[in-house]
Image (cartoon, rainbow over all chains, first blue to last red; front, side, top):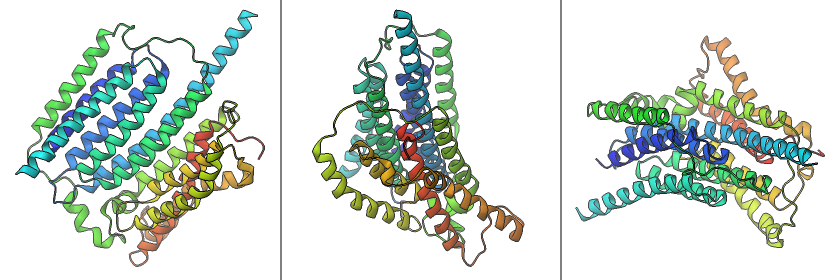
Length: 99
Length: 307
């Protein structure tokens, strides 16, 4: 069955994303890592729903993943806005200290 | 046989490519490059969805996961210039506990996955056998709006919450001062009618084929993002009050339906059997409008000024 490769890739993406989220790297990289983590979970669910090339796959995990993608976009947008506000306020503080 | 081998090769290369892109994305020191890699990662993911017989997910990934999210990341990068110095992936020691936890998660998942017996069918048979009663002929739309309507209702609320959160953080952020190139105006004029047709088609076709409110809404939001990128003002489109109404119209239509059916049928989101198709279309149309407006609001990164 071909979908086994996708399952393994999903598991690897989960591991990679998870280990990067908790590192002290730039927040943008951490938000990217969160998205990779999510993609891994989606890949896992959809590859488990696969029933062969000629058969209709299980629609329930597909619907869950669709919902998940939308929620991921919403949370990414909120996280990015928070990050921009944080960067701006810290750079303002730094400027005032230099004065 | 040869065809099978070619597909096998294709799958292996694609999976390796996905892992490589993810690794490069996290380890590169150039944030712009990381974002571009993220967009290509999303496009490769949508190819993977096609290989896994999930065209609905592929459409959503290409439009939302790669398109709109990519635009959000790029806009964020533009708003953070100049970038302060930061630690890259290799300059930081990895915490042993995190590595241990990550390994544990990976191992446990693999163990669970390989202990799943073959031949299980999940909810596929149930979902496909009740498809004729659902009012639509696309199985994924049937699950999203009929069998598991709660999920979609709450998903719309999550989107609304994100938009409220972004607005609560302050006014719209100024994008870097630069004059948009002339071709963008021409592109906006030519592309927006086309995008509108594609988005409405995706909404309409959702009941029988891959597509639906989320994919259509994301495509239409791309038109709004193009409008903003061309430096055009939104007060030429609508006032803040209308903006607010459009943001909530999807969740409100959906919750009103839920309440009406709760009173008349004694159970939440159980549609009357005869007119189920039209109810689903009405809910999808409301969700389509709200998703479009929410995504544009999220792109602006704050409450719009001068409306």
